[in-house]
Image 1 (cartoon, one colour):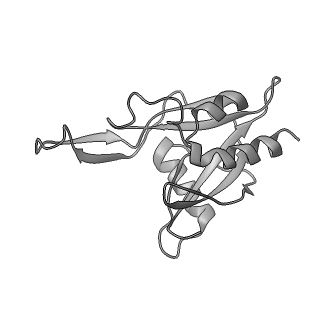
Image 2 (tube, one colour):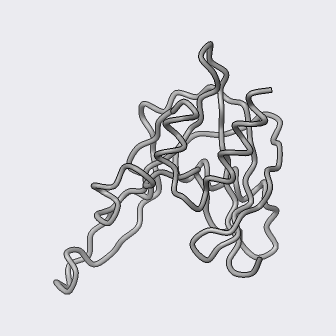
Length: 153
């Protein structure tokens, strides 16, 4: 698997009806109306020389404004959108009702010369396994499938 390397965290929490998984929705105009296959695990690029788990924790903090701890379980890397994603499954029960995300700037609307700032992540939510499978980006489904198997044990 070649290309850029991303690292992320798939947080989960046990519930009586089965595990729930934490996904984030990308901010900005391109994803504004996309729900199904529009959500992701909190993730981002690994900097040169950076440890993958450290990068995953950094990205989690940057996208949600929250720290993630716990015992990480490495999941199998998968390829999606020209990147190799390394993900860690972590049990955590976090309140994501108010997140604080980094921002990015783009020209919007296109070809107007005006630049606007948008949050990297505009919302985060907990989903049961079936709902998460519909919402998560199709390239990240192998990560979720392995996590469902592990969290269900």
